[in-house]
Image (cartoon, rainbow, N blue to C red; front, side, top):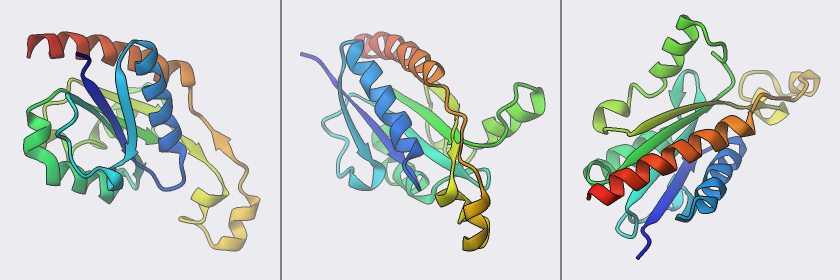
Length: 171
């Protein structure tokens, strides 16, 4: 019997949802049964053998909904393979300082879990996102920026798929 994987996410404006959907699509192509839900719609983890959990990053942290999900489900998450991903617009370079800042995005949740993988994906910034930082009228002058690299997201999902197969066979 195939085991189900939950890809769950927290997003403000949908960019992280789109990344989660590509991860789920890739896992399905790898032969997994996958559900995709926002963290706010997950009522139970009982039907899942593994979780891939992601969040948008605002001000260097995961969104509160994602952090609360981890805190509320820590015991269940400790009993299954968990992979984490972040969708962010800053610290996209590959220098040591950028990598260190990206790694810090998970500092609040990493100690509660033992993730088998962590993914850091550049995100998208548009007028909706700029309204969080700028007065509404100024957001009209911000051009949309989409830094997401779908090949990187898919490659990470394939790697996670392989790790999950190994982990789940060991259980």
